[in-house]
Image (cartoon, rainbow, N blue to C red; front, side):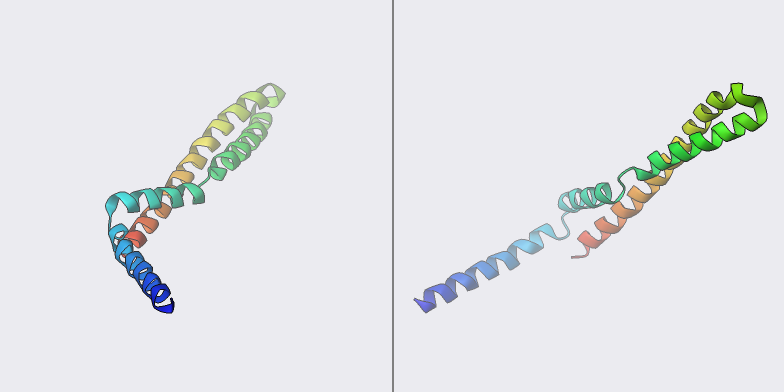
Amino acid sequence: MKKIIVLALAASVSFAAAAAPALANDPYYCDNYARKKANHAANGGNVLAGTAIGAGAGALVGAIVGGHHSVGKGAIIGGVGGTVVGGVKTDQKWKKKYNNAYAQCMSW
């Protein structure tokens, strides 16, 4: 009975070892792996923060430059600008995380 258990364990370990290299260095597998890692890491928080900060700064500048009538316009312009900047930062973060995860996966 012990021989059967030992043989079964040895077979499962050798099967797992044989299956692992099939995933390593596979561009399709590594692409999916890297996308999941990048999506998890770059969750869009920069976009929301950029929008909020940009809208606040735009409203402040609008109030200083154009009085209380320009607060809304300043907030809209600042919010759009902040959204764009936050989106660019998120995109850069996503690409960096993707490239790192893909290279790591391909090196296994």
